[in-house]
Image 1 (spheres, protein in one colour):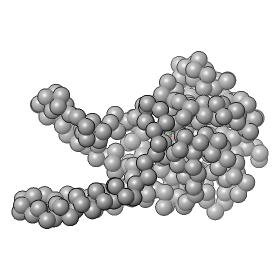
Image 2 (cartoon, rainbow, N blue to C red; image 1 turned 120 degrees about the vertical axis):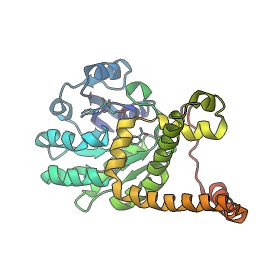
Image 3 (cartoon, rainbow, N blue to C red; image 1 turned 30 degrees about the horizontal axis):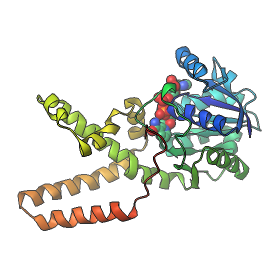
Image 4 (cartoon, rainbow, N blue to C red; image 1 turned 60 degrees about the horizontal axis):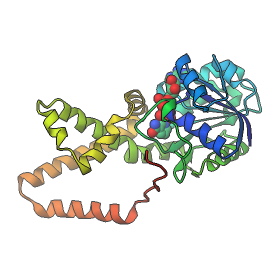
Length: 294
Ligand code: NAD
């Protein structure tokens, strides 16, 4: 049971953690900070937080666990603002979608408190943002990856692992580098492709006509192009190496597909499509649907 949880950034991710822990009866008091007073008021009125703090200093005071759930581009400044107010018994974690940048910022900024910092990433989300998008079952049957560093205290990792398990999530651990590579492939590149295709079609004069007939596959594929642009700009800029490596491979493959079509090489296309279908049919773990939103 967490006595006092401080959430910095009360949006989809931070808000859903609070609601999940409250529903499980695993947190006594949640204090939330967001820069915008209207966001804090909204989170209060939705019962996501019990107290709204007007500063990061006030939010972290007396907290047992602090969750950073702000966009990636704001992580370093939030860490710097909270660092002077941390005490030895506080455990800090984050929910950022890429880990190398946050881990480096924490190492540079937190000083001795670095042993209490557990980088983390819940592999769950929707294309919606803000406190109104939060819901208690977001993490149920989803994965959460923790990427402890060599300085991270083992008992701090255990506390954060237990916290996420109480939301219904399955928790695993890996290195920061491995996380960023895996997530580039499974999340960052797919979002880039969706933003790119929808952006390309949106420039088309016939865009309304095209979208009127969009069904099934395109509707599914384009859903993630509705995700928060600030969040995705920050993710792409922070996970640059892994994303660029995979993009190059993807471009190479696209070129080959174009050549195959030009040369009417059906065998190439069949081999590619069949191997993709087999992988999708036999090797994917699809999270259970826990409510209408995901
Ligand atoms: P969100 O936009 O719903 O919420 C972010 C919150 O942070 C907002 O309330 C915003 O007002 C606040 N904020 C922004 N800058 C701030 C600052 N400088 N100081 C304090 N508060 C600030 O975003 P989200 O989807 O909850 O994402 C939060 C984090 O979780 C991001 O780092 C993101 O990479 C990560 N994440 C998102 C998803 C997803 O699918 N949405 C999944 C996993 C992880």
